[in-house]
Image (cartoon, rainbow, N blue to C red; front, top):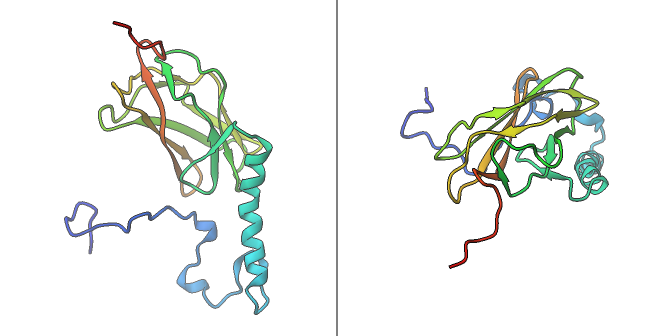
Length: 184
């Protein structure tokens, strides 16, 4: 048995969470392929997979400059300013867009942290999904990220099983926010 805290355990680099809707268990290996691809040629399956990829591209092209990819292929989120003042309302409402089918009312939480402040205080960090979008009204970062440091956002969607996405180096939070550099 291998434990996460075992020194010999090293996960494969670049390994990502795959939601259960796209995985096949060993008991299902003899069943037909998912996505309805029953032909012997793989062209239909490739076409279906490209349709799924295109939906992300279509969503991104429908909202240019508004949405950014997370490390999960199932979620997009709003672009945040690179630097912001603590406890100040963001210029736009933060949104998480689900590309898969998530039931309305599913809770979504946002957490922020980095190596100095592993769990920064946030206000209004929980929202419910409606029409595949979770809108965070008045999300505020109370905790500061530290000098020259940015927060990584962890987005948790409470489906069964829960799905997690991260937005790396999302936003830098300081006491005075963005300002002109000091002059000597």
